[in-house]
Amino acid sequence: MKGPLSILLVNDDGWDAPGITAAYDALTAAGHEVTMVAPAANQSGRSMASGVESLTVTQPDPGQPKYAVDGTPVDSLNVGLFGVLANDRPDLVVSGINLGANVAANTNYSGTVGAASAAAEAGVPAVAVSADTDTDGRADFADASRTVVELVDSLAADGFDGLGRAGFLNVNVPAETATRKAPRGIRVARLAAGGPRTVRYEQSGPTTWTPQFTYDPRVGSPSADAEELADGWTTVTWLTASRVFPNSRRKQVDRLVDQLEE
Image 1 (spheres, helix red, strand yellow):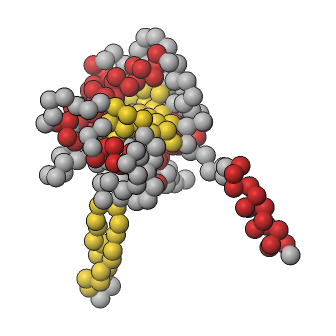
Image 2: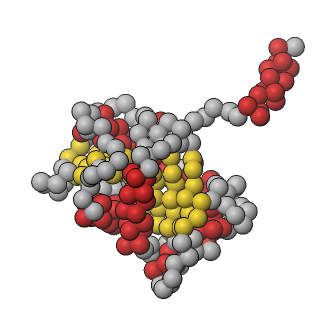
Image 3: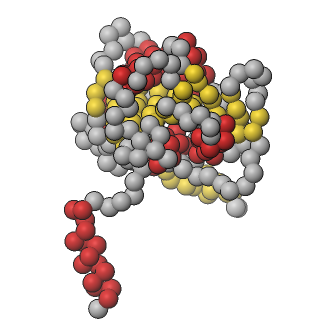
């Protein structure tokens, strides 16, 4: 696929977050036609949640194709796909750039990944992009936005082969590249098993329970996405939106049903 692409840009951090702004600026500078439709406020951790009520949609940056939706990341995606661009389906959905990594089981809760998954479910090629943070909570959005442009160009050259209902890509860019003169590069990695973030709730008042979080950036096996990202690699992971169980589990489910019928 040659020429400028029509790209729908979404996220979960909000329409004016630094990550989506960096992605928008980089993709438009590369010559692509970018329409941003993103939550009006931070909607992190909303996964694929969406509603059926009417939504308030504004254009907070007059003259620019930027829309702020009073809803979730998937609400924003749907407004973009089936509203703003209903008569001009985009070539690609880019979700991000998220502040913080989305690896391992975090992908189940991420609004960034959720929006990309919903796009794939609708048959539109999609990529979720996240930038890991350093010990001060900062991310290298400049490096991540360069990765986005390079990845988009590479996918377009291949005609977005395989992307859509079959699956989408989840990309994580390490924070370490901000200070390293020679980034380690990009690797394909499988999704790590387990969750990097664990939570414990402690009662802090008569009716209040406060969460205490811990984070293990190296959860899973050495060759999976969390470990590779922690070692300084940009990771690319294939994910699917399908909930269809694999054939390898069919006999197990059949046995369960047989037992229930006895």
